[in-house]
Amino acid sequence: MRTEPVLARPETPAVAGAAVLSRQGDFAASAEEMKFVCLLADGRLLVADGQAMNAHVLSYCARLERMGRPFQRVFTRIDKISQTYQADSGGAARLDHSRMQQTAKELLNTACQQRASDIHIRVRRFSAEIYFRVHNDLVKVSGHPRDFGERLLATLYGAMTTVSDNAYKPNERQDASIGDRDKLPERLYGVRIATAPTGEGSVMVLRLLYNDAGDEIDVRPLGFSEEHAALLQLFKEQPQGMNIISGPTGSGKSTTLQRLLAGEILESEGKLHVITVEDPIEYPIEGAVQTSITNAGSEDERSRLYSAAIANAMRLDPDTIMIGEVRDRASAQSALRAAMTGHQVWTTVHANSAMAVIDRLVDLGLPLAMVADHSVVSGLVSQRLVKLLCPHCKKNLQAHRHEVGEALLARLQRVLGAAIGQACIAGDGCVHCRQHGTIGRTVVAEVIATDARFFEHIRAGEKGLAMAYWLSELDGKTLMQHAIDKVAAGSVDPRMAERAVGHLNVAEAWRGARHGREWEPGAACMPAVLERLGQLGEAGHAA
Image 1 (cartoon, rainbow, N blue to C red):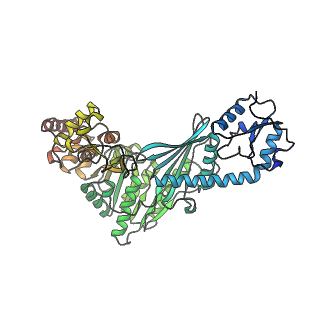
Image 2 (cartoon, rainbow, N blue to C red):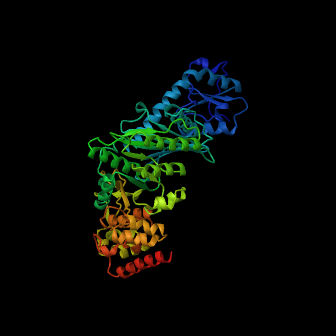
Image 3 (spheres, rainbow, N blue to C red):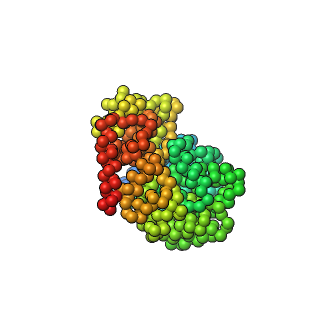
């Protein structure tokens, strides 16, 4: 039995002048629901004759009731519902398009206010969810009907990107970028977009590129140590050789590159000709000539254009060439050729560690004899990002040891020794950190300035000896040791450090123990560490 009156069947429902609400906004119906229902602003809900018990009709009515929206069912012919939408389509579609663009801009602005690094929009079977990645954590910020999510994705891709074919195709994987300053908040330089179909809908991820990343040229505020900064400065001052920064997606490689190049240009008083080859341009670098790959119709075509752009850059009288990423054999060969012909080259690659960069280049098809040459590959860097504890609400580890697992406590006791007293964990949040417990992220890194002897071991297949030589003779510090230093200083939660570098391990951390560190571990650790160093050397000789 109906609980509300049934109005007379109107001949043309839209004539009454009531706007259609079920096309867009809070009361938007899905495409299937719109075949059977149409909600008007005057409270009428047009329902197709004979469809009162249709699952789509019942679902839409239930949603209106949950939202507290009063309505009165009006039964009419199914073609009248279609005509009502068609009569409203002109102005309503334009209004909806304009509103969705405004919604997209507000979404980007809100993400900027929270200093999110990424926005995830997931369209599911019956809903759409929006997440922000803040301090490396995904945080759900809102939920919407599926139709809203579909229109938001179409608006972001179709109306805001700068690709030649901006038709959004939910059943295909697509990449694009937003570079029009009028469409972006003041704090953003650009947005990179990637989409993919899923088992129940589609997903879009937007990487936010902030335009304040180049305000600094000093890498130490990013988290690099004084020793790291000195080595990176050495790389900048070498007129030739390839310097490669590695790390997973989102580890801050592009930000590091930007600061290094901006600093190099500033220190030369603008007398260096720096050319970049990027796909796409990520951050502005004051004083550099930045070029991008455009109009690539396929991955093969993109790869060809990328290599051609590197070759072209070499003919433009550069002092320094920055290649956004070495990702295939063609770009790797072009980067190597640039370094071998007397240019300084900076680039990035996906590899697990600084030493693993060499394996990655060989895997891409470069000959080891050419890669393992310190006059060609002069610098290797690996980095990760770890959350930085809020100094106002962080908690002493010893005083809150009950919040940390026994296994982790045992590892920390072995690795930190007496310094465990200074270690801290994340607090409950405060006004200074917006209740996050963290205030951003900091780099943990390892930097290798290659030399002839280091590469002698690499060419001979003696990776263990190469590692031991770097740590003992070149005063190297592993990425794990850098993370442990930050845990010992109380600036990084050990649980967060382990998520970035793995279990904190004393043998790994103290391979360079013969040269000492800023703090002393338990004395009982030292024999095991020195034994591990010996094993590394034996393994290298065995190889």
